Length: 197
Image 1 (cartoon, helix red, strand yellow):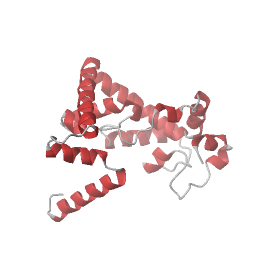
Image 2 (image 1 turned 45 degrees about the horizontal axis):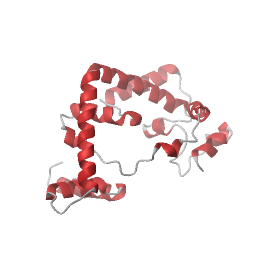
Image 3 (image 1 turned 120 degrees about the vertical axis):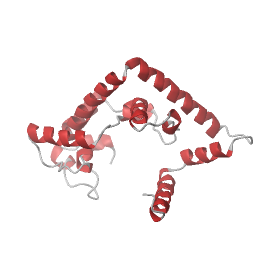
Image 4 (image 1 turned 180 degrees about the vertical axis):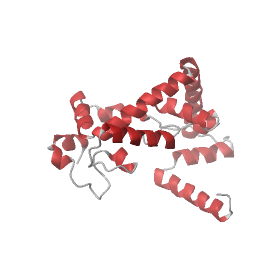
């Protein structure tokens, strides 16, 4: 079932039993341990958001990915190269071309808890960006885009003369999600066995 078909279902059916006990409405809140079938009061929801505020120093916003990475970079004292990325499995804008304003409103109406969560953290994100500084953010995004362009050239226009370190990085960045996660797990297991974690 695609998103458009889900949106056409009557509400009780759309909000019914989760497929494989994993997929359904209000998935963000579900993943954070909240019962999405319960309709909380404003006070309960506010308390939940306060708990999440204490737990997470930064909540990244997908449609503001570059800004999110810049804030993450500063939070973790990383470099621009540490947050540079390749677009590998990204869907283009055309993939959402049939998603109308009415569809968006219906999603918000069906997933009210997730919509409230998004609105809350989107406002906090705006505050963080404002505090960071508009000009500084613009400059840092330009640096990130230059680093991304470099990776794009190096990883997709490979030549014989490339540095071994760059080749290794490109291989990691171009890996499929499952292969990448398996590699991370193996490295973590080795570190645990060595007593480094």
